[in-house]
Length: 293
Length: 293
Image (cartoon, rainbow over all chains, first blue to last red; front, side, top):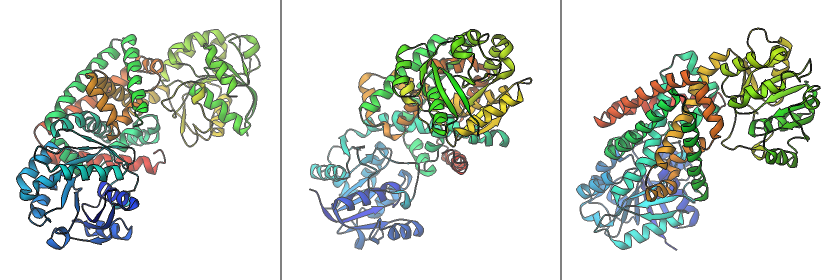
């Protein structure tokens, strides 16, 4: 069983808070110190016992930390890395929970200096549409996958430790290259979010009377998209800016397929529609079988 | 409290089955007779006590029915209407649960003859991705909206009775014109399904190794689309063929918005992305406030 005395969470939101709660629940950590830019979030996290104390990006907080999790939007990552690079203890392991990984690996290479070998980039494939410390819960990662993308030169022991921590949260861990992660997530996560944001935006542009009817009758499908499109705006802005190539590539494929379907509808090609709608059911079955439904 | 002795359900699937169960639970119906093309579905519906007996499109089944619900894909509606038009009792009310309404109104005008004034077209805004009698449950319509689209000339008492039946299922009822229904549902339901089918289709075209990773990591967003894209293929084929104009109009708007977002990503316009992602959150709040989340 893995255990550390002091865990530092930079960014006490949904992911940081849930990680703290999950590890506390298993007894894998002693004290949890929270660091955040928002005084309100830190106060809430203390109140909810998500963290035990508030810290800062200083030596007192960081020099004796066993593990530091960076759970801030990717856009804030370079500044945070720069601040902590010289303050970390010699054995402190650092990880992150950013939704994109190649950019985070590059940032770490530029900013983390001596701590670089003990930085294990990570991405837990879990979340909800809610943000903030009050949205965290101990079982968020249970049964979900966590992807680690350590570049060559990363301390193997640090990777092993991280694997054990995520397993303690109930996750299964997969190690892969950062670029492969970004390509895969462009399909499973970034494109779905982009599409959800778009359709909800299309509705937001309708005249008000129509919009209120759309809300009223949203249980017929639209509702599910609004849940996804309620995710954190800054985090998602950074995802699209930082995984541009892979997202645009998948978006191109999607747009082609949409045009083909549009054409089938216009020309009344019922057979084509039915064939596609039957094929897509198989993918759903795959997800149910993989226990990710 | 509304009550009839004999309810006939043509099509014992998710919607027909749930309607039968909901009305049985409230005591609003005496006996429920199921009519269906699939012997297996009828046997299952009997076994699960969704229906009390099996019937057919004949005088014995229809002549003394208080209410007949047509819960078959819209493509099968004309043949069903033709078969029952001369067999219905003089006071039998007929309704349907088709996802498109203008086409159903037109079919009824062509096929229902003397029974036309007692046909009240309807569409319960509720459902799941499951099909078949085993997927029905008594609370499916509870707290959801049901839209009725009686054309001019429909018996007002028949409309009133239908309103009360849907209220007995726990639904709120809205009466509107069929064309308006179809425009509204094109946005709330048909476009979301089309998009979900498209993205799941895009994934189905990826090479197998990638596909299995997409399934594994689907909890990051893709999963929610597969649920929608697992809906009944024949029903959805008919929806797109029968509400072509409205769907293509909304799809055009969506495609424009998607192109604009694509451009913003390509040119790294973070402000535009963040502004859109913030606006879409407000729509989600509207849905939560309307208790349709």
